Length: 234
Image 1: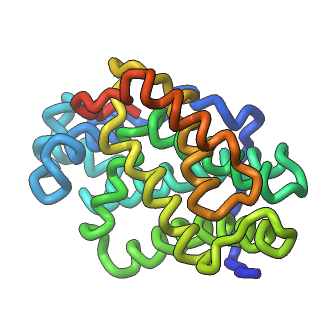
Image 2: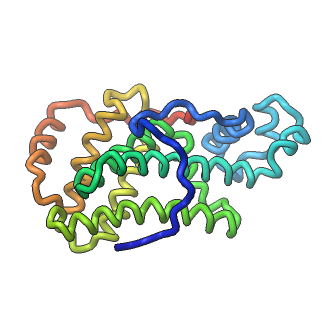
Image 3: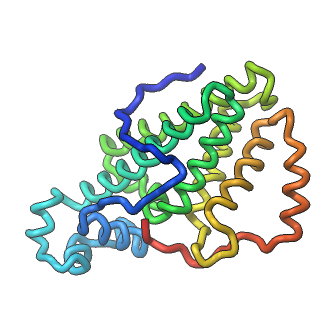
């Protein structure tokens, strides 16, 4: 199975819950500005104006704009990793349960932390050393999922002949939720997560998924998920 260095874990007790993060006001306003105008379209002066402080006062807390982006991206990844670890621990040894819990957890993160999650697109704006550190965190999440898929294949639960590609595909699909989810839409994060678990089980070739057909039938009779404007809130 695949292995990767394990980043330090935080404490998450209820992995389905995403209470507001205790972010410094500078980070909150930086996140909003980056989401609205992009990293390169936002200046330190813009962020300072939003916070209501001078530029020198902002630099007292964070060295530069790059430090703000790095802190936000690493906060995002560590948060989802901590929740996924708790989800996997609760699921136990069954790879199907572990896989389903991880997918549910990631989708809930993308919906409830969409302001942070959407910043992943700014990986292109990271300086090389910062990018390498962030990519290592993202890779660890992918390795967690791939290990579970490979375990499912070994035990006869999954049939995909391309586990690495399947793992990347389901992660990409889940990450897309942060692009379109709207709290004003007809589906709750929990309902979206339930559907995505079924979609992702199909992607890895779950050998016992009759519920996929029932879900497709139910899908035709329900309104589709809202695609309203993305909010920058976390």
